[in-house]
Length: 157
Ligand SMILES: [Zn+2]
Image (cartoon, rainbow, N blue to C red; front, side):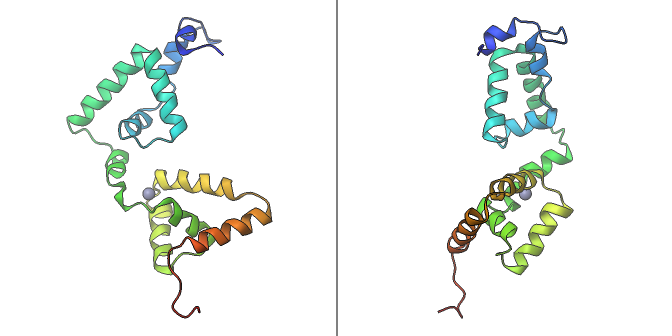
């Protein structure tokens, strides 16, 4: 496999240098999320790799950071910055498995479906994929989530 630096000089199928393609393969929103260190691990790595190879992307990121510091906030960004209201990954797991407290289910429904939190939606999608395993594995996972829920009902002996 070629390194970013080797590829940067090569032409892509569209005739544009690879470095230009890389600089435009991330949305502004994605780059802002990168600045907040909230992208998935794979995507964080992809941005970092592209940053090393392209001046264009570095300049774009710098200008986004500047604009943000000047207070030009998009709705998405304001939401990202208030992400403290997001459920944890293990809570999302319980949500999917239907082992969550009813009050929390209401809140999660609101948070994920009504507000449409992208962070949680992608987390949830991730978990769903992980759960599309054999029934045996699903059963094991269910037991794991139940036992790791952290509390036992008082009427259970
Ligand atoms: Zn969320």
